Image 1 (cartoon, rainbow, N blue to C red):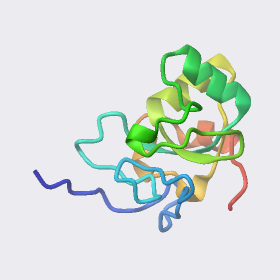
Image 2: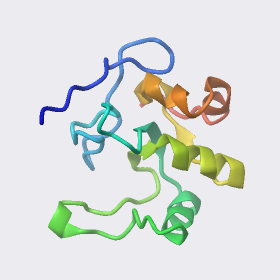
Image 3: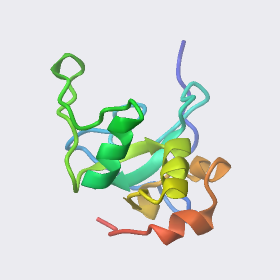
Length: 127
């Protein structure tokens, strides 16, 4: 089965910028928050990790901070950029622990789940 990515457009209507190559992120592990029909989690929000969000995610059963060498995953630390599932970002927003986001690296499809107004509340650096 061939995965056909959605057009690489960000929530601001421009070209989707890279989220992170170190560590490499994204559903396609290409550094971008690209998505496709098979990306059921919609890994489309480029977030800047915080200790608070990493602890919250671990509490919910998605440990993003522990290295998993068997998956070539180094573990995330505060300050790292990572493509989050849009629904997890929205959940963190409702819980008051959402991290900052990079709007220019957040995929347009995130707007299927999170409003632009909510994302703009967390606008971070345009690295």
